[in-house]
Length: 381
View 1 (cartoon, one colour):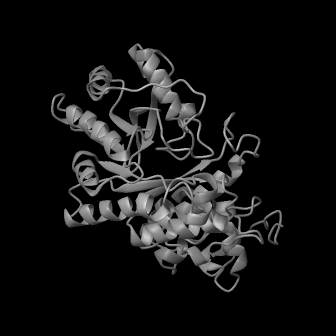
View 2 (spheres, helix red, strand yellow; view 1 turned 90 degrees about the vertical axis):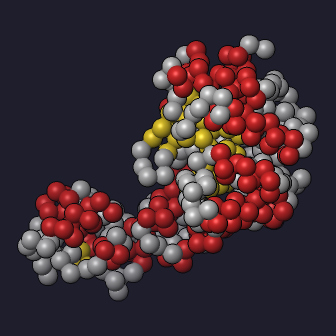
View 3 (tube, one colour; view 1 turned 180 degrees about the vertical axis):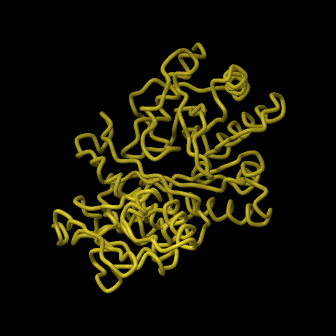
């Protein structure tokens, strides 16, 4: 099979392996070798153009949601390590890409497939002398030796948990062991990275959930995510909304709405950047994040004993809890108030805050600014 045909088949198969907040389809450039280039989020902010592909879409696993599951009716293809390394080098030298995101189906065994993935990255690093961004997927059940070599070679590694706990995983991937095959490699990677002082895999590790495939509520997903941030030094989680694939056991199940993905990312940002704890998040009676308001607004409305907050005296963490304020706007306000009191909503706007959203929850020099209440004032059903 020609190179472009392989990139087409294996890039298509890699579509649901996320390296950005949502499906990368909207950022792809569809022409020649650039067809499966997508953007990936860098740890410190910004984007980088990466080739995202599988080494092979032949897979011995039979995950119920997956289009390349064993016995699935899809075109199969594989790269030889040197073939993919050479193709990536051509694309990188042509200025089309700045990195690579390499995943794979599990062909024969995880160790044999990891051998080939690592061989590919070793060629990229040594023969082609590429020093830049590599994100390498750790396959379920990868050995400690493979994990050690992966963190030596890659800026970032990841394991797809797919579900928040063993019971939910069993519903969608009954042939995977949640602890031995998925969380164990994450723990090994963390130990190796910590022992190196952050020199190995300096961008850390990530994971991904298939949202809604197993009927799990948001509460379960975010409880697991919060624990991973605390215990595993996870850099970030990705949330892939379930989409039924024809011919799979979950064909016919309703797709997960995109607004649910959006709410999960909003809650995730509160955990990562706003010093929120899992217990600060508010869920509906089914354990999901409500659709009608973002998680930060719900928190503010549920805690009238905290608000309004005096902008001229409150600390950084308190200000970050105000709807409409983020790390940048809070940083500016903390700096500006050293030079004089903040008295007008226009001061919030100049700092980059969404002033109208913040207005009901702040005091400016002891006074409530003029504001309108939100369209609803009680929790949605």
